[in-house]
Image (cartoon, rainbow, N blue to C red; front, side, top):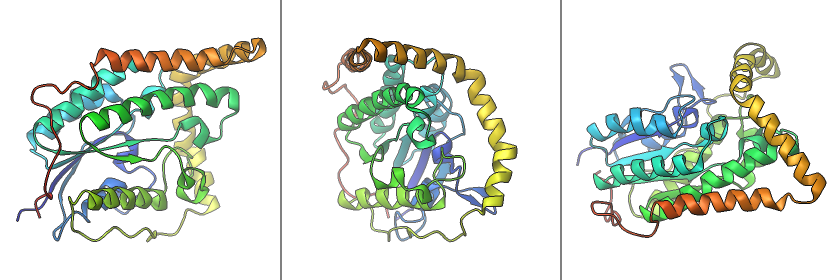
Length: 292
């Protein structure tokens, strides 16, 4: 049998940022690709740092479909929450189109919900809560659409791995090698449960030593400062406005209104997609193993 054709879509998490090898970034998707069958998968990683849902839909998806994949991972959304233009309705529409296009070709779909970036980075509560609210909205959409398209879905938004500092790289935004391996192991277990793969699980143990404190400081003084500056230019003005709104509602005892407003937006976004109705041409679920 031919090797599995595996295409990964998404942002820096799937690109492999935080799991550096001599050849550059590796990451969970590349680790998983080596464990899908007796032969390594024919793996193409289209994920790019900074990608948002519109980048996946407009730039990555057409390339992926032309490759005729058996397995497609779509893990994206955190960068949407970090932008002034965040719109859960637009995120839901884009993800729905990406999922539909992949499953319509008969590909098995891998998805994941993710932890909120403010909590992972350790931001103060007044700054972290608005980001957490946005990430919960994205995760709710991903949960619903993953059910609709019968995706192999990883609940990675919470659990011990989120709070275990050893799982994360120095930037506190991306997993380190141990964290990427944890994602690969958990995705592999889900594929095995579905009877889709036969290859041995990836090793959960890192092969490289963790960065030294000196290396961590060097990263923060060089690449890290650039990363923070880029995010601050785009996000900080709105994040400060969100924080001010958070403080006003806390002072009035009406913080629940922010949660209710966010929940209503998610419900409206999913309702607009006619969630629960099976569109012509969408997948009814994949049966049988991936080609070995």
